[in-house]
Image (cartoon, rainbow, N blue to C red; front, top):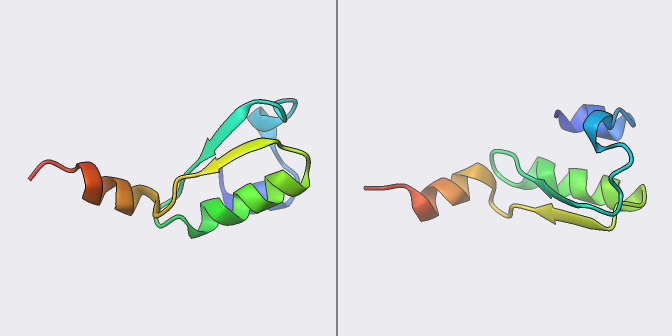
Length: 64
């Protein structure tokens, strides 16, 4: 789900899930952090940003 959609209030599948844990990721962790901040401001209680994004996950878990 693009950050722009979230910031425009187009929450789609997230609507009605304000009390559920929402794990958000992007490539580097910056857009997902912004998405978490926005969702938190809209009443979501359990947003989780994957810090460093997919790049950090790849670096930590990629087989050599």
